[in-house]
Amino acid sequence: MIYLVRKIGPVKIGKDTIIGEDVTLGYPGKKKINCLKEEEHCDLPSTIIGESSIIRDLTIIYSGTELGKRVKTGHHVLIREGCSIGDGCTIGSGTIVEDNCDIGEGVSLQSGVFLSTGTIIKDHVFIGPEVCITNDKKMDSNIKPVVVEEGVKVGANSTILAGVVLEKGSMVGAGSVVCEDVPENTLVCGNPARKKVIEY
Image (cartoon, rainbow, N blue to C red; front, side):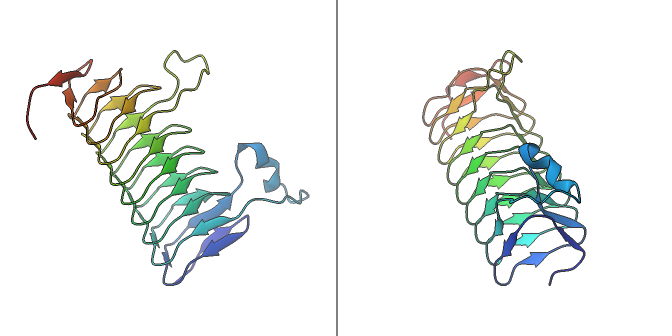
């Protein structure tokens, strides 16, 4: 079922995928914004949405982004250009995924998550609501993306600062500000986040 969809660049939609109302697909990225002018004839990279996905109302997916199979978005989701999102991911309402993010399989991004440019999230990660992942620690355009390894869980309203690596199986408590790498299978919480001796 596809209706009221605005397609700008080339779009490939997999079998049994549902696209909601007022969805925009293939929107040009910042380097190709002139493609919105009627007199411009641009070659935009394809936007690909895998089979059995659900793209809910008012979602915008930019050109050159690829979603795998069984990806589900909430409402008002924005996914910028050049992103890769693996099979079975869930992207909550109001979430913003900036350009060139790489998200693995089975990732859950809850409502209101912000991923800055270049964020890397590996398989089976849970990111709680209103989490902010940054990439510019000193706000001087020195971009250092965050890496979130397999099986990590990040609690609601946490902030992960630029360049941090959350190692495999680690956990961040709700409301934390993470300034340093978190070792494998370690729980941290607080502002700034510190290791807690708690079994989970």
